[in-house]
Length: 208
Image (tube, rainbow, N blue to C red; front, side, top):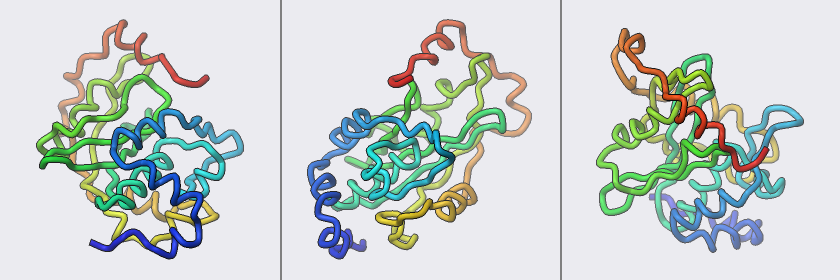
């Protein structure tokens, strides 16, 4: 596996110092939880690791890139997983990691759900399915429809680490990568809506 680029650590010592402190998935998640949400008040963004750290805020894919970079810095492969929904909802992106042959996920979200997953899942599909019942609209409709195969950032150029501009090309590549359906066509009509107490819990946010 290609090592984390020395050029980056030499050119950006401040950012590299942050990554150095994030030596475990739990520490990475704690760092992201403490980071303010990027509400994109000035328009849509898809910031690189360095740009997100400079702004001091992140949304889901920006947080996933920070997590992937930290994992790579400490010797793990930088992997993303895209969770795709119906058109009525927004997709979500997490960083994947593996410990003891089991999968876990690091997630940046403002909500009480769609969060960190401990490395207990035997497959990426099993991990993705753990998000299904938490993924619903305010009216209780469950919206998760597919998940991507692990998206390896080592196959991408390294601009996601330090680019000044938005990474729309990377986002499009992730969105267009191989995805697997959660269930066969026709099944959604049999889905029960989330219960009122679940919907109430889903309104809890860290930042308003």
